[in-house]
Length: 337
Ligand code: WQD
Image (cartoon, rainbow, N blue to C red; front, side, top):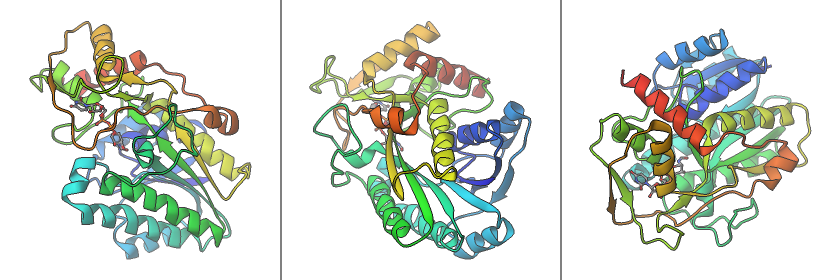
């Protein structure tokens, strides 16, 4: 089975390509290299011994997408990661996000609907829940009005897919990630944020190597045990494995509906201070940080109810926060060496 992975040279995409190859799938990657580099192909090959097919292509060019599917007519499964994903940037530049995250999804689905059958895995996010009322968060928690155009593109994307599967032979699984962190144990691939990292863990590891003076902790006055915000940090390798299991579920026609939704988290919430403590433990370094006001748009807490993923999808996160922090730290030191 040939599987298309869009954004396959990105952080989660590259880890998923490795797990697909480990399971014997032939992989073709589309990436426009706007937030990744072709060197990642080497990293993947060093791990699996197989170099995935790669097409440098911008999914915003409809004709290029059509040409791709003519050339790779044997693709019947797609895992769609390619999207812009910086919450703050999306507020400043909404049209970039609506074009890049929505039009590309439409072009992909227009190609897949022409096939006798197609399987589609969508990279969604717990952002769709906003600040959920109840913890841990289940898949039937209400989708709340998006706090950013980025979050809105995930909600709209889910709706487009749901509507499309009703009238086509496409079956889909929506994977709502919590907070992906860490790096592959081989230290061949990991997170490569461009510029100043928006996310907590890469900012911590860059502070650890001295690239950043100190970490700003955005708020210690939240209604949480230690006052800092709580998230569900899931190891990227656990997340990648879930994508392969989801795709196999569709290929083997085990899905119970045309569209199924799964939360992908560990089921455990960790505060910012707990993440800092984990880093200090695994790195044996003191992390300089300063308490700053809350960040605009941040929620207090979010962690997953993993029952559905465990019992229906047959997947469970296995790696701990310490293992994620240790792998992220090891990767940062390599990238900076
Ligand atoms: C985590 C916690 C911050 C940076 C976002 C997207 C989500 C997904 C993951 C794409 C928060 C605090 C952070 C810093 C800090 N992205 N923090 N200092 O905001 O939970 O989720 O990234 O799919 O869709 O919304 O992740 O890592 O930015 O923040 O104190 O320098 O760390 O306030 O409490 P977030 P994050």
